[in-house]
Image 1 (cartoon, rainbow, N blue to C red):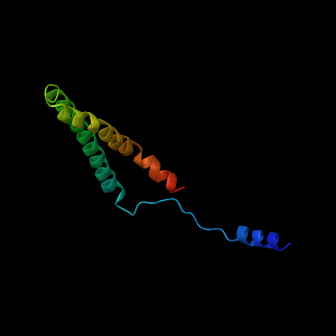
Image 2: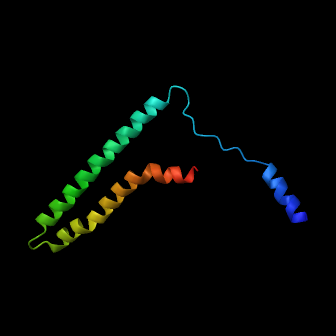
Length: 96
């Protein structure tokens, strides 16, 4: 009986969970800044992959450690790009 009364009290106390609302006038500038950030990540990702490829090509003969550094950088670049691509989904998951 006591457990049932406690559950009824918890059901009666609803925690508010409002939807996110941008402050007036800030939705457009914030969208622009996020767009610039996404563009910067794309540029950095392409540059990172090009640099890794260049290291592998330069280090092909007699510089195997340089080529290995280039090859080991590829997963880091792809990981960064993957994180950037899924960032809004990850944040949205925590805000539900």
